[in-house]
Image 1: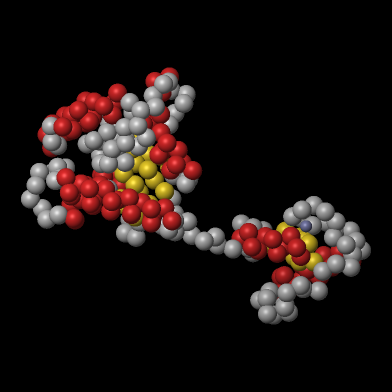
Image 2: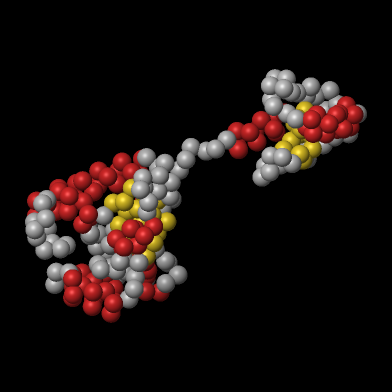
Length: 234
Ligand SMILES: [Zn+2]
């Protein structure tokens, strides 16, 4: 006997009924085992004809009602969860470009320079912000990160040049994918020279002196002893 509603309510077709009827004597003789858990199905028990998990048109055989039910809740589309990406790399590495290429409308992208650029009218030099704009940007960025890591139903991209090891660990606990964008020091120095404020050269050298990618990889001998918190906001 079907455990939930009538066969018509459950929308089963002739094939299901036929296959069920074929198994019925086996189950009633106490000979059937649940294909899902492998344990016998008692002769007098309700039973379900189990579907293949990957192809609902395929029948796998009799199964316990409770096993079938457990599967149904397992197969329920889970609350949609997005991926969390932490994009690390030296200044001028191409982090924003990478995010632009991967993120789609509806995703959350958190980029210091982009936030700063909407908090003050244009007019200054690229990547250079007055102190108050920096402070407000930092607060807005943190608020965005806090909210985005709570609302995990869409992909979130957070750009962070040099997160501390503790911060990386925190993101990893949230299930973040750590993406390191590193085209090499020569490339980024040349790029920075062309398009970034001169202070960036120093920031780049510092990044390569203590790259967070090595901090995330304990197998890398260069990691030994680096514990400096060089968190920066861009
Ligand atoms: Zn079972």
